[in-house]
Each structure stands twice: as structure tokens, then as C-alpha cells.
Image (cartoon, rainbow, N blue to C red; front, side, top):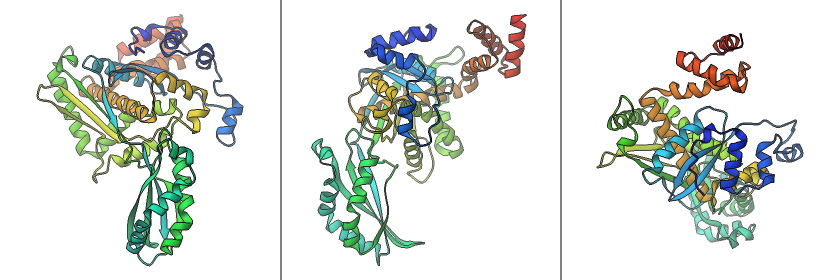
Amino acid sequence: MNSKLPNFRKLTVSERLKEIAKIAGLNQEQQQLLENDGALACDLANGMIENVIGKFELPFGVAANFQINGKDHLIPMVVEEPSVVAAASYMAKIVRENGGFKTSSTAPLMRAQVQILNIESAQKAKEVLLAHKQDIIQLANSKDKFLISLGGGCQDIEVHLFESSKVGPMAVMHLVVNVCDAMGANTVNTMAETVTPLVEKLTGGQVRLRILSNLADLRLARAELTVRPEQLKQETLSGEEVIDRMLEAYEFAVIDPYRAATHNKGIMNGIDPVIVATGNDWRAIEAGAHVYAVKNGHYTSLTTWEKDAQGNLVGRIELPMAVGLVGGATKTHPLAQLSIQMLNIESASELGEVIAAVGLAQNMAAMRALATEGIQRGHMALHARNIAVVAGASADEVDVIVEKMVAEHDVRNDRALELLRELRS
């Protein structure tokens, strides 16, 4: 697979599809899923959620140029915001020229929480649960022989104590479960419910909540990039100046939570579209990421940026990444399955690493734009196309109207209408 897609933007939608089909090995039926409305049949949608009355579609784009650990990946992105796909692709092109992204991840470990109340002492509950750890693990694993056969299953327990909560002493037992290529919610929830009677018997307390945690802090994905100064130079700024400005922008996100929230939102601009495209739970990833950003008691950047000894810009990201290749919408939605094929991945851990790299690229793009010409220049140029289409411009008229609005720095609905009237008169 080669993820370099030169002049891809200049192709028609149909021509782009043919190009991607050739690279990713999509068959005619899969191409039709992307080309035609209705890839998700209503009957299938009705089986996925309740009270279905139809479907809501979003643009499906492909980010190019991603090379990760020496391997090329086409990145499916389902998103409505202009500039996201273009920005990720452009940053990946720059990074590719310097060896691409380097990624790694921890084992796919998820936590299930078992809340225990009405106990005399949380500390005593902890002692008895740890004393019977193997019994609890064995019981948890008794419900999923298939997972055990794949090398997964419950591997450990932890007990967290809250001696003086408003509802009395509370012990919270965590089942630590290797979920392999699954996201893992159903697996760990079932295990938590399975061990409940034993936990109540051992502690003499009552179990209330039995549910996974979306703070998947044992299931981390990491990505790293290095960029040389000359790769970042602009017409009026040297590469060294651009790097210094980007580091100033990064420091702002480190120290100020108001800035960090927007900084991290930019990271999720890259991550969420891939999560959605693959049928994974973007809300779970968002929740885990933002809690992880405050793990040291201060909400801060999910990325780190610095200069190395040679003056190169080095960026890194680490965040929880609970994504799967089996179960849920990933297996139900036809386009989710197609996205997995397009990504050229072999495991859920590799998917998480690819997604982390996309988030890092998106963060780099946002910081570079903010630190130089400002975010609006590129963003509004792409947003202008939406405005022109809403105004009623045809395909031939859109480019003319966009060019005029961008030149005027005046991207508004009423201005697009004025320009359309002028053009047609």
C-alpha cells in the first residue's frame, strides 16, 4: 500500500473512489457502498439503536501520506468540519519526509469497577478481596472461554478505598482484563456481574455499580514525530522561527486550562473522525482523553513538544485508546468494516497507534497555523466552499465565488449570495 495521493484533491469524487479502491483493494460492492446513498440499510440501523426513523450522513474523507513505523496507511475520516482532512494529510506529508511516525502501545487492558457498600471498613474489604484474588479471577474468566483461548481474560484485581464517602465506607474493586482485539465493554461488564455474589460473600457488603471505566489508563497509545526546521519555513519566517512560535503556543496550552481545552479539542479533531469511521465509541475515547489530560491534577496538553539537540521539532502524544476490531458497530456497519480494510491494520492495538498518530498530526497542523498566519486563513478558505454551496452555487460557480470571498477576507452567506447574483447576471 502507498498512502501518497498526489493531486488527490483535484480529482472528482468518482475518480478519488477509483483510486482508493485500487490502493485498498476494494471490490465493486464495497465501492458502491461509498458511491451510493444508503450504505447503512434502515433495517440494519433499526437493529443498532432504538426508535430509528432514518439515517444521518456525514462526509467520508481519506487522509493521505501517513507512514507509521515504516508502513503506509490510508486514513478514513468521517467529519463535517472543513480543513481537518487536508491539515492531517499535509502534516503527514511533512513528517513522512523525515521518517514518518513512530508509535507504540501497551497491552489492551480494560478495567471493570465493582462498587461495594454497607461495609464496616473499606480496608478490611480490601484485605479479604486481595486474599481471594485468584478465586475472583478464576470466576471472572469462567464466562469467556473464547477470550481465554486468545490469550486474554482477567489478569489481576485492584481495590481502591474511600473510607469516608457520603454513603459510608466504600471499596471499589477493579478487574483488570486483557480484552485482545475488542473494545471490551461487554466483556468486562459481564465479568463484573459474574463475580458480584462472591464479592458480597467475601466482604459482607452489598455490590451496587458493576461497570467498565472509560479511563483506560492501562491501555495507552503513543506516537512520536520529528520535523526539521527547513520543512516548516514560510515566505516570511524561517523554520527556526516557526518552531519557536509553535513551542510558545504549546507552552500556553501547558499552563492554561482554557487554552488546553481548545488545544486538546484540535487533537480530537483528528482522532474522532477515525473513531467514527471505524464504528468505535468516540464518546468513550473523548472521556478517557480529557480525564487523562488532568492526571497530574492540572488540565493540560495531551501532547508534548520540544526541540532536540539538532534544533528539530519533536512531538509526542500519549493517551488512552480503547478501540476494537470486533463487536458493536465495527462489525455491524458496512462502512466501518470497509474503513478497517482501508487502514491496513492487523490488530486493535495497531489501530490505536494509527489514531494516536493522526491526533498528533492534527495538533501539529493547528499549532503551526495558529503560530504563523492564524487559524482562519486556511480554515476559512475551505469553509467558503460550504458557504458557496449553501448559497446555491453550482459546481462550476463554487470555485469562482470561493476565490473572490477568500481574496476579500469576507466569507459570509450574504456575500456569497451577492457574488452568485453578480456571476449569473
